[in-house]
Image (cartoon, rainbow, N blue to C red; front, side, top):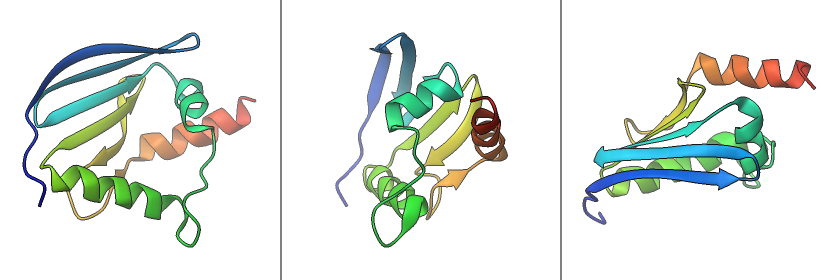
Length: 108
């Protein structure tokens, strides 16, 4: 086990016209995207993962890394949690993420 990371952060990250807020205290970190399109632009808008496992394999690799340092990372879009890392043995994807992705597909 790598140990524990203790953080205190307020950060605004700009990617093009998108402003992504990163805030955290102790072992809890929130990454807030203003909308689904901002998340898609940063992640390439793809749901493809590493070869041989798909997107869940990729998310679970991130989850394992976050758990190794005893952190919780909450990825939000427009105030709604989309995925949580570090709370369990696998990444937790919420219904908001699924409906947000479906909505962005039809909004093209």
